[in-house]
Amino acid sequence: MPDELIPYYAICLFAGLRQEEICKLQWEDINLEEGIIVIRDPKGSSDRGTPNRISQIYHPLDKWIAPHIKESGPVFPANWKKTKVDDHRREIGLLVNRIGKAENFKLYPSNCLRHTACTAWSARYGRAVAAQQVGNSEKKQASNYDHVWTKKQAEEFFSFCSDKINSLQEIKLTRTKPERKV
Image (cartoon, rainbow, N blue to C red; front, side, top):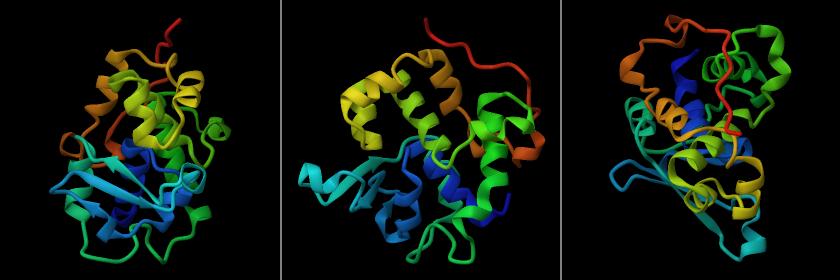
């Protein structure tokens, strides 16, 4: 995966931004010192009467984006098209879900990394915090994400740190699926 795409994927995966939100995101909207990302004009903002949403930067997101931070400009590289990142998204999706089968590409739609974040945030921090982080209603968070992962699985997900691996290619993909809560 090209280094210039790492912040894009890390923010989608660990902060839960929608693809259209991260494609509009500017580096000046990310404040590592305060640990926040300001999402300007997020989905549903006009319905809620709020122009911006604040998303928290927790570990490991800080470790993933710190080496790539810039003073200004778009986070999503201008020389990339949204449609040209599918192979990398599939690579990350296979890694996170441990399916390991390339033919399961249809399991990884454009917001699959966001949905993974929604699931992990619900399991680790609870529905209310997760909904605020990712810009969902608590009702949507409950119906779609509360029942998917255990807290242990979320902890494993949030331990997926850049300092533990040199590249995604070094990690062996397994064919086991994550356990689901019943």
